[in-house]
Length: 503
Image 1 (cartoon, rainbow, N blue to C red):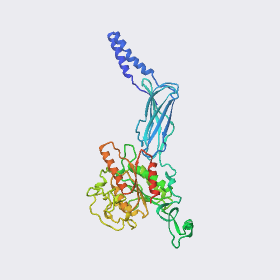
Image 2 (cartoon, rainbow, N blue to C red; image 1 turned 120 degrees about the vertical axis):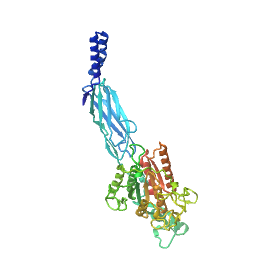
Image 3 (cartoon, helix red, strand yellow; image 1 turned 60 degrees about the vertical axis):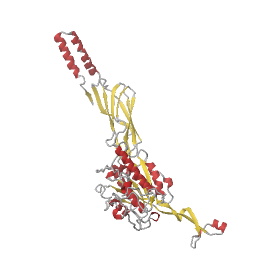
Image 4 (cartoon, rainbow, N blue to C red; image 1 turned 90 degrees about the vertical axis):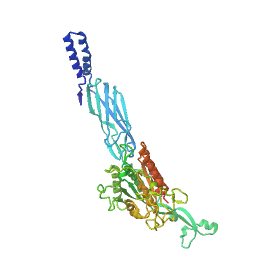
């Protein structure tokens, strides 16, 4: 669209006024002065946009399939393929409304001679989903800015950024064992890997006798192999309203990043043959009515039916794309303040089990200050077995547990290992970790870091988050602090050994 901008019409008034004054008073100086605005008027009239403008634009996007929160570099190249000089070319790239430009700007202004080109480089923050770029808007102005042409120019090259899970093999596939759905444990029995030898007992299979040892010493011994047992993992995504905060404007929320980490872990574990169930906290039953059970928790076991994996993908995709309607304030409470005496419960002190004293569980108080009084209860495991290291006492009874923790514990199979994906913005994950520790459930925590440390309040929140990581680590949980400026596969590689070789 071409448009004439009456930028110099004030020159018409000035010229007429000076001519009138010069003729009225017969003053040659005033008449000569009328030439000044007249020259500007002629300059604006004669300066125009060439009729045969020919611009070409190309766009490159790197990487084209990023992870949520990653920086995506967009390079726009504008070239003058015509034969006329373009004194003022302005370009605005068609960035999707959902993506935030940071740092840089998606605007370019430059003169272009025939055959010349200019590059515009900026970054956008990737979000879960696929986003298409619109054609860049171009405005060409004349040298005097009295005429301009505005139009859209199609851009060749990349036209979209797809922030989706990249299909491929598990990041640590070479660490898995040969039998699908099995884990090695630290005990002897049927298996493939040599474990130990023991004295021969009547009824031992003949093919398990070490005949080389018999030939050398005359003593009969039986070979034992490392026992393999079925693997069962429960993946818990913490998408509560508290976690719907971002490190900066335009970045994915902590809940969305937790869901993305859960998606990558789910894919890797499933591909490795590990039976993996998926559940989440903070899901609105109205959004996924068919997936949420009577207890308010979505619980999906892909091995129950053929459509199970599709439902798990649907749940995780929903958590990654739903911004959530409710947002709760961050908690600055440290894990140690959950005790009535303000102590740390003996974390890391000598004589502790899994980093803790064997008479007390630190860092768990069901969302309220804990008490110095704790009750001995038999059977710390969900299956009625003994607790960790023979511990059969816990800090709280089931009645003192947070309702969400109780619902999760009621769902957990006795032989499960738990993976919690949470940004750790309050003490609830520590409460859950303590309850799992008392019941001897192995726990791995993958925590995306969404706490920006620019302001004093954010620095305090970062300190509180680090203290929760240490609390979980001292409980014996495997903790992975995922800085969102590093690829998610790095966190997956660090967490899978805990899950595939848990003993």
